[in-house]
Length: 409
Image (tube, rainbow, N blue to C red; front, side):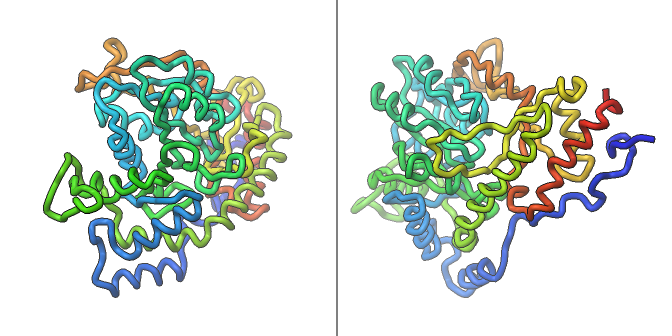
């Protein structure tokens, strides 16, 4: 008789994942939304009272002078590139292992993405590989604080200053993370946050740029997100100075972020505590190796709990079959990305261009990204909010698959 659920055996957790639901909401979300409904400002082109409050509170939380709430965490990076004058003929260095949004904004402004490898210890962009990729056309770097682990911002900023490069931190997965005393977005020219539903701070869809650069913030807030209306004394609702669209957040969206923000610190601490417990549990399973945390990280954001999978300890079973077997037992195991970004079908591999355009791409050797496609797995941040007895379901499912892997190979 089969033991594994994927082969028809009894499911280890018949009710499935019983951890906390996501997204979470309560009376504070209802109160905030009701205030918007009761008011006469629902949009106001990104200048309403809830958005102003969010901009003030999120900047204060991140330790920056300014925050500009926008429609999502992709246009945040695109507009930041535009604000810095980056366009056709320029190159922007990006990691080859991350969500596509980071790379896709580069050709959207006409520039060339340059894909580089990541550090095997944390899956963040490797500072040494950045240096190797710089050319006379390089104008910017977009480091991604992947999975909530901060990049080595000391080395990245030293390289950026040496070569006079713009740094736009992609902090979409690192709400609450701290590197050597500072939260993400404080190191570069600006930081880009996402509030998409899967993120640690969410409102369904939204984003923000944080920065100490007042001029950059004003241009994003008043012009680039509002049809090019200009800044300062030039700002007028029906006068347009530059090519720009409507990238604004609504008052409803801002209201939800404000409510969710009241829980962020508590949830971030809880994720960090649960991650340490889970690390100890799964480290005792042969073939499972959690990624280490750099000692300079004061607090990991834990959007993802990442671990290496050694298939030899599971009878040669590849990570995709392993993840399906674990998930069948009642807990979701995420296989992450199937390939490095430069192998996505949107790129013409023979001509090395973005399909449908004449925009080139450049690819540096990325062995760690290719390795990750074969052996990196994760559990998402929502699982790290569970009670300990619920969290124990994760290693239990892995162990059951290992003990019965002969049914699959």
